[in-house]
Length: 499
Ligand SMILES: NC(=O)C1=CN([C@@H]2O[C@H](COP(=O)(O)OP(=O)(O)OC[C@H]3O[C@@H](n4cnc5c(N)ncnc54)[C@H](OP(=O)(O)O)[C@@H]3O)[C@@H](O)[C@H]2O)[C@@H](O)CC1
Ligand SMILES: Nc1ncnc2c1ncn2[C@@H]1O[C@H](COP(=O)(O)OP(=O)(O)O)[C@@H](O)[C@H]1O
Ligand SMILES: [K+]
Image (cartoon, rainbow, N blue to C red; front, side, top):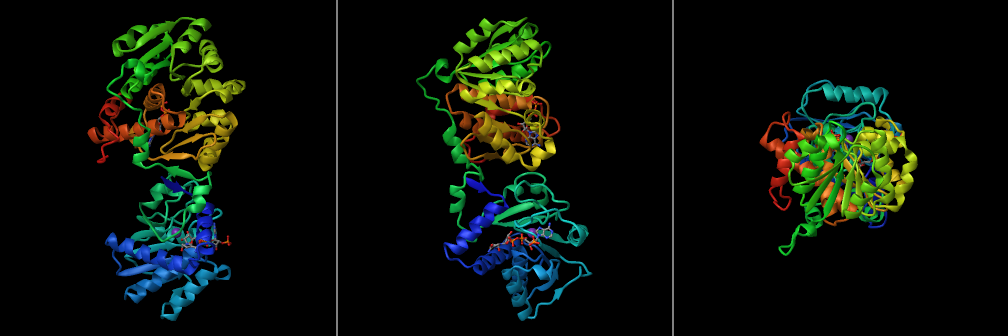
């Protein structure tokens, strides 16, 4: 697994390494500067005329150290001190003096001229507020200038904790980040501003992160492979579970089809669809492998009967917010005894009737909201959630005792008591109606095979993303339809190391 800390967690790891493991701060800075230069050389960047723009904190200290090392190698280096000299950190002051001691000169205004390489060492993980005034102007200059742009640790202006731009941010071609990727380099727009990211090992210990459950993580592929349900030879359809899909509404059959087919593609043994009567014929034609039961009006006993035969349930995709849908949802929430995914209109109904959340705490529920649905569930605006997504997710999972898949270009998976997982598979080909229905079916299909809610949610999200990538390799990313993902599910093999 890879930890994805925010700025404060990264600083805690730096501090632990310096104070408890006895590696001096200046030694770490020297390694950081060296590793930046090595990474830039690996990329074969042009060192003819280098401009390094420094701030007054330790990110600036890295900048001065890079300047010294490059000057010692004979490069033409110009340093522009953009930070406030009255607020220098001890390390930054030391590095400044060291650079001066070898004859380095430092400008206090943006130097004219063109540079082959512009290195941003203004703010790192210590950025604590909106970038304004003089700093804003400097970053604007840097963004407009020609030359290759490299950010030290993180582009200045990107919030290391959420990837948001704090007013303005440096647009890098490359970012060299120390020890681990900060979570702000994973989420958009931070990821976009960072360009190509290289992680360098400078010997910062991560043991504080092991103890701190509030730090999110990115699983390795091997961890996903271990989560895959067994597929023994000596088995039958009953071995792989019976999934009840409650989806679709009058004239809306697509969602039920996508749920059910995705679940079959994931390996579920038997899929039963419960939907509105008008969808019967089309669903039978689209997916003859499914068992279809329909309703014209609410029938509580029928819902309870279907629940009693299911090994897993998913409810909500295309369900509508009708009175009948509401009653079906309430019956499911109050009677289901197996793991259950709640998607789309299931979530919208839940948001309209928050008292139903009292049923959640006792069961095994996975909620799969996109940002707008999360906004309805929490009463927070989408920008508020984006700026705080990990915390919003974690407080919802704790309060309702659920698993939650918060969908976006980067999806987060949380469960009460568990470290939050970030998913980075997938691409913009998935940004099309119906792909959420496929995800719901993928997760439910895994649940039917008996893996845990957290594993089904994390593994399902990962595979769903990969299926988008597979589809995008076969067709252009404009043209992919949700049904193409169903095909890709069949050809995406996560045990294939070429992925
Ligand atoms: N030994 C170590 O610890 C190692 C650290 N390393 C490096 O240090 C970096 C972290 O350094 P850091 O903690 O000093 O913070 P940093 O990112 O330089 O910024 C703080 C400065 O910015 C200022 N400031 C903040 N926001 C502002 C705003 N909006 N507008 C204006 N000013 C603002 C803030 O000012 P203040 O809030 O005090 O007024 C302060 O002066 C890390 O990313 C890595 O590159 C590596 O060398 C490895 C070893
Ligand atoms: N740009 C993107 N990059 C990666 N994944 C994406 C992107 N856009 C959408 N997705 C994924 O596609 C799915 C869309 O779900 P949702 O918005 O519920 O779609 P729908 O309701 O139309 O089926 C989510 O799993 C989301 O994470
Ligand atoms: K920086």
